[in-house]
Image (cartoon, rainbow, N blue to C red; front, side):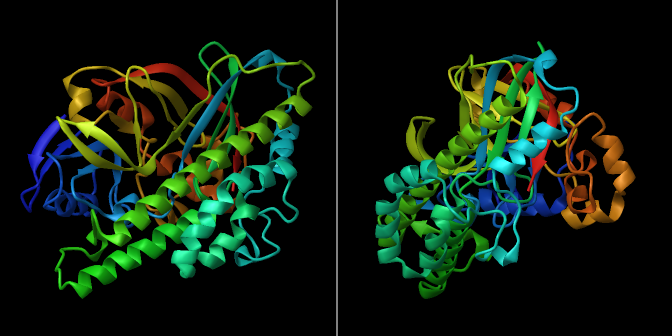
Length: 408
């Protein structure tokens, strides 16, 4: 762990030994850590890199205010993993059919500018999704009634429940250190979460202008606790986080059905599912105080709480738990949410060829076209270096290696 004062005076504790941190991210961290409502310090995970609004890989404890842009727009984005009773030898020799089966059951990607013919949304919504959405729709309507500008995305939320999205979201079939078969997936609250996040970020910026509050970065615009907007925002984010969790659960059911259709052997899940957010805000207690903790690309772990740290398309992933001790306390019971990007998407597309990507993903049944080159393993940090940097408070429970990867 490295401890240092930011350029603007805030305290930062960072698990970055052996991993690079670009100057742009350091400047963001300096600005965040200096905000007057930060509680004790900002904790930085080893997958740290610049992000829109706030640094990815940051854990931000606050008292009396919340920064919507620090939570971001992919509200509730996170991971889910389940171990099955299948073994590697139970899988078909050719895994393309399994990949196709998953792709057929889970809408993914985005077409038609997200309109009616978007392949990444349901045209005719399945009954299971409809039943789950019934439990979410009433509260969503209350949010929309108070904040009508969210309504357009809200009208599509039903069609997005149980869908993957784009970018770094994925569904994978993995093998662990004992060749047990796992399903692991990564997604969030889709269009409705994005709209909620974007809307409240703009409202916070408007509040700063209304009260003539000058900030070093407009993305640090905040909502004071006790204000109407603060309460509305926290309620909307809580809803989006529940939507995201339900989204992952529905996709997991679909992925398990695809696996069942592709493997003749009957199987069950033989361990508790891990379902964790890594873009969210929560009420927690740290250093003797009740605080709000914003995790932007970070996962909460304790000795009793499992987390997931995925690698890239061709790298290892990990099921982890926390190690009790001072390091864990200083890290605010957090770990990285992945390897972390080593470069921008545009730089990855400029630097790597299709041949590079095919070689890096050899042995993985996945897309190997130009549209996913920005997700190639070399565009990310070395996952082993990331794990080593946080070894003082993160214990590896299982090591996973993907054999099938579905990308949006």
